[in-house]
Amino acid sequence: MRNNPFIIGLVGLPGAGKTTVTEFLEKHGFVRVILSDIIRDELLKRGITECTREILQNVGNEMRRKFGPDVLAKRAMKRLKTLGKKKFVIDGIRNNSEIIYLRKQKNFLLLGITAASRVRFTRLKKRKVNPLKKSYKEFLLQEERENALGTATTGLRVIDCLNQCQIRLKNTTTKQALEKQLQEFFRKNGIV
View 1 (cartoon, helix red, strand yellow):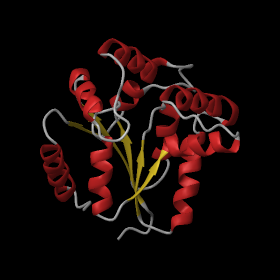
View 2 (cartoon, helix red, strand yellow):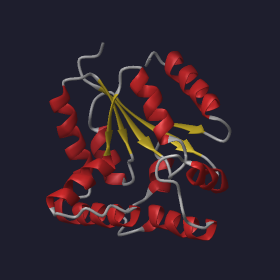
View 3 (spheres, one colour):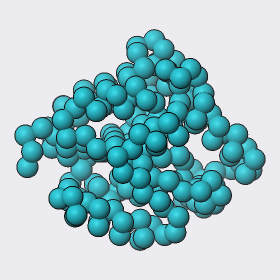
């Protein structure tokens, strides 16, 4: 086992399969930290109980402006250090500064999960927990926010983040097919 923790950063648009990837990694001893949970903690500190995607996006950008564009990555690393484990997955990277900060850590791998917008829309509609209640047009507008909300420094830039990934996996068919891709990649690279 490495002396330094092994960290996988996970990037993907909603419905791409990030949860499937994190569940797979958890089965192999990884501990998950979700960046939006750090924003939820901030909402609770403020006494805000409503937690929509738009609120999370806006407060996340506000936190980046106030505390620095890499604040979520820094808080995630602080949280990881308290857990005393050696393998982590950071789910939900959406800003370039988060990647810059995390790449300074030893043993960091940035993994992107992609799927076509129609595929992701269908998955989100069928999701058991918190299914999407928007039309396809509304979904596409929401997706625009994921790629251009806020400034280039402090805002959401998921596509830019995907373009920086060392590994990108296409998740266009089934959960089992994605898990097979993951198994092959991680075995080949001695990760799981």
